[in-house]
Length: 406
Image (tube, rainbow, N blue to C red):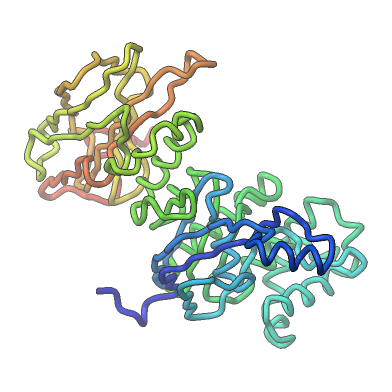
């Protein structure tokens, strides 16, 4: 059970419907005739259906989905712009929504005046904005321009100011919609440092809506994937990101033909109903040994396909190894293939092996597209335990050492 005092946001069985007009009544008489005939003049679009999840304090929480899936509507519900027809949303703390860059900015006002205007729109008092002002300006690197009118700013300067107001506002919960890649390269590095830092702050919660799966894997510790107004993957950020990639690769017409896709485990589908890693070595192992494992798969199409194998470092983060998209060309059918991986380079740590089944890209033969992947349930986690080794770094002293030159 989750401690309710530690919940920053709770979305409980939320549904949202919009009414889309189908015909316009020309007057009261026509409206009355339509009413007597049972003609509503609109159709209902169910944008969200029975959405439930919790975000804990300190989470960096990702919300992903294809265009039209309902994620932007969900964000507006969380931000209080919309009200749900069903269910409830509970927010514990000061929530700062940042849904569109520069919304609420006035080009005829100065940068300074726009900071105070935007802060007021976010619900802060003048005294609270006074306390944030220097941090906002410093982060935006616009100290010499704050008394100029916003219309004289370049587009890049406006973006930096708008983004800085959002992320430096002293709220408890920061809601961001597709705004991580803003500004020039130097400003993006600054933003990256900020999000790396905020990830470690147990009192700051970030909710991120994005199409960039690299951002999900890099920043988020949890995520959900929304499809057709429903959550289809909830929890593991890597599962969410990989399933989103598969969703985007699968043609829309193929998805219409295969309405039972979501009956398969996360990562699998009608084309690949089986893909899992079966460890043959002990799950607690010394780096002097090789880790042996089998991959069971099923793929029956008459085309080339490959298995790509990646090793994730759970303890330190990152991907120490990826086999690439074309290293292991496989034979069709329901088969099992055996592999081994030397561990002699590594210090102690926790690792996860993941596999994806890939086919050649139809346009670029050098690329492959992911058809299925092993999720958290059917991948393989193991522990390297070297007695007496230093485990801060990934590589041990035998694999890498630095010598001082005379």
